[in-house]
Length: 404
Image (tube, rainbow, N blue to C red; front, side, top):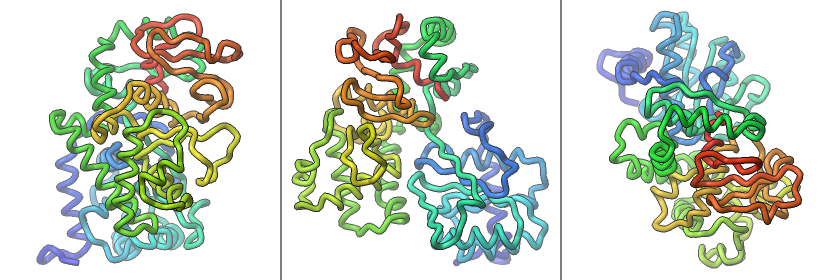
């Protein structure tokens, strides 16, 4: 490791922290800021690259009402730390209180390091990691020491708030089902739906859109390549030639319709022979990293070897950034899934498009979509694109963007 001349390891980290504090002036607080219980001693923030984990960590530290010397920010992306425990011990000896570790999945055996920090030093630790992060309890029992929060990209509500500088309410799923007509009417007094919605679907899921709107899709493409080339191999046992296969698989998902995938044909296109287990593992890696979204059939279990019901990219922005062509039906279904999965379970039923929380049967379509496929369902709803206000059990698709 190279150090700045005349500085110790802790000095160098603090100098980097000072520069980071000066650079980040992001005032907007994401939906999860108030959901985190900061009284816990060890907290993990897990989410896809680009959803705002680093921004959140720096916001929290900057606003924390303790002296600068009592809080420390470490990033695996920028500073090579040979031992997390060694840094934490030095910090503790200087009466440090709060240690933040960004991109922790880049550190080898981080579980053991965290356990030692927790058990010996008594520091408060908040760390972030890839959504694909797997805490290996065979190395250290962190499950009872750590509270993990899974965070997601901008909801449609958050996007409008950031884009327009307004404050908008969020609603529960039950509130939307029961009162969607009145809720939609009230919301539409506060913003222009058509312009905001079109922008969000194409390029509003990741907060870094607001840093440079013109280069957003290019940067998003680069971000996903980094996830595939760097993040996934740092977590899963995957060889370099299979990184190429992961990219190829994403391209194949891009060009597919939102129907049950043919695994045999996928294998043929991937030139993987009869290696079904390998294909399922690749899909799982991409799913864990939030590059793709896999919706499984109802009551088929959570095994990675269960045949997917439907596969989309993780959110609609990825379709615009990574795919040459795509179907509107795919975009609609991918959008609905990305809006409901943070807080609700979703599966593929025998009839209809989705089963939400094992209770609500959902059919997705355009403004002329009817109830034919779910006409006998007790809790059946048509979720329609291209409408501003619904009626009865027909609800606008955009409204589900206010769930968080």
